[in-house]
Image 1 (cartoon, rainbow, N blue to C red):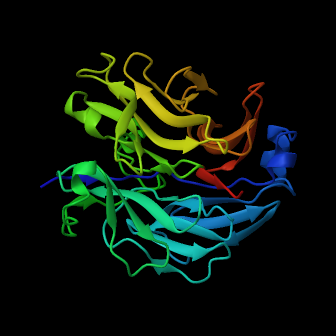
Image 2 (spheres, rainbow, N blue to C red):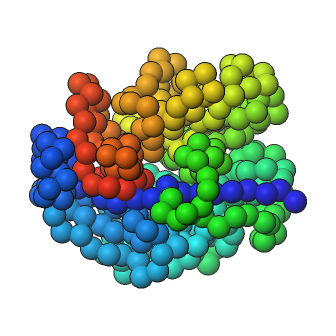
Length: 324
């Protein structure tokens, strides 16, 4: 039986990206999220919140939620609820289950009609599926392509319960991220970035981009085996709005640190964004990344100017998603 672990780092908030880039870290810590700017959703203690400015709205009642992602029009959120994909309105209304199986972090298609997520594939390893946003429909295999004409695997394989990092679970950051199966749909709708893929037949770990139409894959980050010779992983991908850049959380045993890597969509021209232990970056425009960083001994949602490197710690927490 294939065993899969999906674990999530703990979260708290950020907001007002227009104002917050110019705010000092001391001001952010003292006054909370600055007013104005874009809305950000986040998780704290397994609860999803939404914030714009200093106000904070609790969106979920229980504490088993993770990886929120705004819809393309900003009116809804896809998220993990107790390990399966759910959708709710941006104000927390109309919560409903979408996936019928344990899943990795979801991603919306640009037209808002589909949600992609990772789950057990016909090969016995992780694959990528899509499902309608209203629920009640069968999941459709996308990757690996060989699974497209085969039955969707039965539900119910073993996995450990997700954790948002606020528990006392004795795992390191590297161990928690290693098998994070969050996916990212490209802005033009033609591609999906995901952990694993056909490259795992020759490598220990890899990050792939698959063509939704043809099913063809290409690896953009490869570790061990026939890869780059070092051990490590690439996870939690994100696309810039123009589709020209993709970022992901990386780790390799040479550098011995988690970091954010950014590259062209081809995987070329790669470079590190931010500092050691930065992770889970999403884009807020072409010049700003919002990521999780180590600050004051804890995880903080942090805005980073991608041109100058200027950093603004916002709030304690992680895994931000920014409304369009």
